[in-house]
Length: 430
Ligand SMILES: CCCCCCCCCCC/C=C/C(=O)SCCNC(=O)CCNC(=O)[C@H](O)C(C)(C)COP(=O)(O)OP(=O)(O)OC[C@H]1O[C@@H](n2cnc3c(N)ncnc32)[C@H](O)[C@@H]1OP(=O)(O)O
Image (cartoon, rainbow, N blue to C red):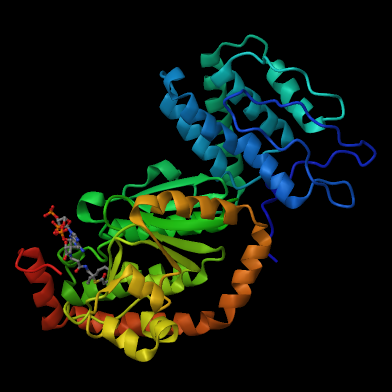
């Protein structure tokens, strides 16, 4: 059974001590914490409670940062990077360090502790208060610097001993083609090439894989893919076809098929609820992948278009298997073979989209709903997804392999090359 990261658990207080209502440690600008925390029958803090508490200690500063943006100038970027880095730590730095981080953050953003001291039985809030209060009149700038230094020392000492895959220590801010954020239990992966309608270039394929791997291990409950700008995505970037290596087009096609197979494989294997927030038109691979998502919410501005025949290509993203199952073979054929473009309403009627929202309220309504989902017990959600999806996994990997192999041949065809040349020479558009 998937476990919450060990470091998401703060030590439980001794059983004998009765929970007392904690005074609020937060500034008036901050959201108020729950007054008491549910405990298990053994008196320990429950898993969700502990996770929420860690979010409070670790993630809460991210919210605060936005509120205090104007107050920080000198090392704002370092400070912001340090906060992102904290969330990427793969190992529990321990309660003592977490309290130190909390205290330095509060000092850096609010100055010396000015809150009433919590009661003796309010162990957690008292520990936080003590840590902050212990910093006395340490100047804000020094606290900020100490925070950055502490995170940097943690990153080197904890990351080097963890078994992470190469590159997984990359910061969420370090992406070229994506914006990745983690807040309120949701990791949001936003395609971020709006001037190119979020077309997927080779860099973006790699970055999405990286972001999904990181999201599968982070402490968020759900993961969301969406687009920046007016498009969700215009699909594969057709300039991907232009950079021919010394081995010629055959090598290009072979490498493309390897990349595509690995890319789609990441969606098949993604362990947490994966939700698409389709903010605008979607084309090609950004549509076919939707069959591998757990829920798809769409603006009524969105359209769904898979013009593979027009492009001399063939379906991918496991759509040759998922679409006929979702919407019937004939409807799937209209889309995948004849390139029929669906409106959001039609896609919803076919089962490809879960729900459609008016564009004017889309973001507000969807994110309210997602935040509520993200509060559900994460392990239960994972396990339920697993039981819904797992018996299909082997089949999906086989379909993926077959689709990539067929597509590799298609990329070498005149039909495909002509379509790409026509688009790149501005002779055609969808
Ligand atoms: C051997 C190859 C190896 C490849 C590596 C692996 C790849 C795996 C491949 C998986 C298979 C995937 C298949 C698909 O996704 S098929 C779908 C492909 N997409 C398209 O055909 C869409 C093409 N774009 C358009 O038709 C129009 O741009 C669009 C209708 C989407 C929007 O039109 P509009 O008029 O509103 O906007 P512009 O055309 O002016 O677009 C703005 C700029 O964005 C550029 N653009 C948009 N989409 C793409 C794209 N898909 N590829 C490249 N560039 C794109 C467009 O050119 C404009 O750029 P400029 O401002 O510089 O002119």
